Image 1 (cartoon, helix red, strand yellow):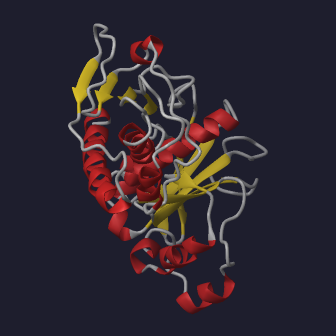
Image 2 (cartoon, rainbow, N blue to C red):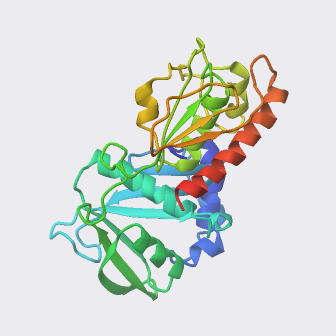
Length: 301
């Protein structure tokens, strides 16, 4: 999940810049005692700064900064392009989180500033970063020496690498979760898929007999993981909802959906959280989360 930074992110962001492993690729780690003195209470509170969160823990950051005129790798004579930067804690490396988070951030940028180029710079010897640059659609502009190593400078042009914005791209998979009251299981599933999909899957939920509000125990269970569904309003299932979706998932509650050719229909047999306390809802939440993670891996493979 991408979000604005908060005070609780400060320890993880200090760890990022103090980490010797991370420092290997950015010119060296910074002294921890200096970071403790200089990093503000709420770091990174500015436009274009995103914290990357996974299961309630901060695992990295993504930034967009305007490139100054004397920076290497000219794309425009007067510079001004957005410079994509990212850092992730070592324990998050090699799991695809950077690609998903950067793609979601680039989609946000494309919606905010359509057509604006984005540039990226990384050490040429950093194989993992070079693979990510290629996966994100960046093409080489030039290479140069800096910080004692060869640096790779690339540009992403939207006409060549279109954004995966939901409004602009038709190949984003659409998933619909259905349960009778659209108050518990389907709401938890939708929130978890939005979280793990990081903007790369369109998500909706509905029910044939929607309740007046979200199940409080379901909301409390997700709040333990930093996800807030208290503002969600259960909605009525429509034929249009089903027709617009690629995957339709019922939650073991007996609700039925119109059948259209080309759609994939699944039924997840889940216990009903209605009338249950949070101790009983946590295992349901965990079961849904396991299934959602599997669905994300399948849809984005």
